[in-house]
Amino acid sequence: MQKAQQAGTVLVATLGSEPQVVTAALSVLGTRQEQVGRVALVHTGGEVVQAALQRLLPALAQASLPHTLYPVCAPDGSLFEDVETPQACDAAFRALYRAVWQAKRKGERVHLLLAGGRKTLAIYAMLTAQMLCDAHDCVWHLHSAGEFLASKRLYPQTGDAVQLVPIPLLLRALLSPALTHLRHIDDPFCALERLNKLELEPKHRQVSGFIEKKLTRAERQTVELLVTQGLADEEIAARLNLSVRTVQNHLYSAYTKAEHYWELEQVNRAQLVALLRLYYTFLGK
Image 1: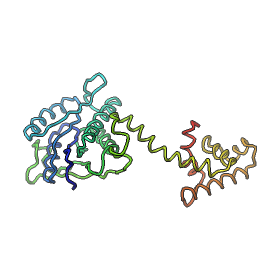
Image 2: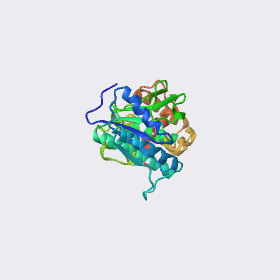
Image 3: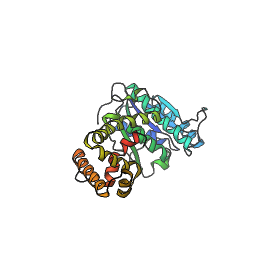
Image 4: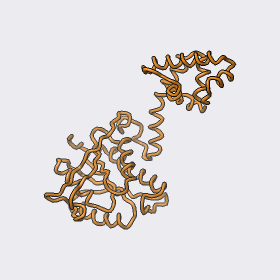
């Protein structure tokens, strides 16, 4: 495992009813020679979670571990009791994203713990990791067997079957916070919109090059009616005042050109529509 960056290492975790999930993760990371310097906790306002928070914070203080809280809040600042509504889900995503985003802005190495709290939080945590984490970061699930969680002990003891299971992360240079335009976007929904635009632009240029440079004018007219309106050959022929055979010839030519352009073994009607839909979507058709 790689060494921690000079800026420090942070454990980002969602807190549920079991604070020992966080302390156990810290313990296991310690055995891996990972010197965690800070803990970032995403939490709701439910009574069970608040009780877990009250138990966890003194343990972190005793271990001399600074912590940062990221409450799942409504726009008016009130805490959501749980993550069960669309509004609460949005708030949870924002809290998780901000916790990791701020860590990456500081140059910290992130250990993102998926265990803890609702499954919804784990989904948003994974999405956050895909958006912000890089090759220095790790995503973990805590697996425990036996009586550790039932015992309510904060730290595992000899014989407790507790381990961190690494979760594979799709590393994409485009999404690295050092290489993208996400460094100044602290809202995950704005960041997603920006990422989608960044990813679609080169694909749109590629499709545009095919339609505008590889197809003849007659082929473009035929293909447009196929892709935008899903017309049958007979309907396209009637619309363009062509014979059905001519329409079929235009489409066959488009299939063949698409095979060469995208280096595909075969392109059929459905595949051509899928390949070219983006072009007409950008045009609003």
